[in-house]
Image (cartoon, rainbow, N blue to C red):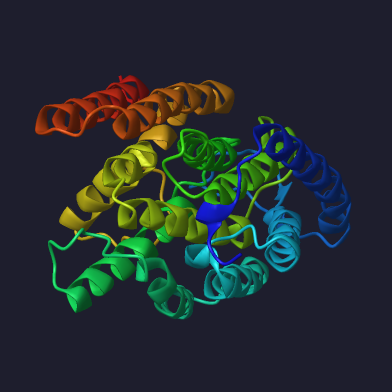
Length: 342
């Protein structure tokens, strides 16, 4: 069996699998927490932080090791991953985890990080686009790959930048991956991607137990960068298969918050790669909203985006439907961001 489309999606079995992953990540993160405390690998609060107490960082190490082992086992034993999530994507996932762990321990600098991101994307992208063009033939083949690669690298950095309050990255991971699982249940994407989505949902749930406010441990770059990478791979795979509306809707909040903030900072001539507290969710926290309230609001908005993504694959294709779904998604995100800075 070489293609994820040939795998029957067993919802009950997939849910059990996700629960096992969630419990394993929860237990492993608890053990890692003790080690990080003992070794004093802590995130010390500064004027750009959204937390007040020194907190262990690098909690994503347990998550990525378990996901990587699950991924490898599923590939070798059952071939549960289709070609778009093959060996190059797994290598990029683990390689970025190793690079980001070093960065968590001692800052490697933006040029080194960016070079690693572009290398991982460049090696994995040919497998993603092997099934078709990301922009559905609107761009020449070489330009399609270049633009898709830049978008992928940008997305994984957006995902990393947005990891600034308790629970937010776990919520976003579960939402995007859960949306992809819904599309697999509806029969619109290969079942293998549904299994991959549920594995990510389980891992995010297990980590959220420790990361929900008040967080006992932070994800760190070792978690957020690889997660952004693999979620980007799944979203690009959606676009390649023709479901580009869903690929835009599922990460819409993160894209909007990070994108608008980046444009505003660039317009002021600021160094956009430096840490700051200007994201909409950060401004909400500065205005007195709790981490729990903000992350919960994001989860509600993401639920609406998942419903819209599901509708995009079951409703008849037409310009009216496309514009209606994208407008509803934009309105959902706009209302959320307006509420954050009201």
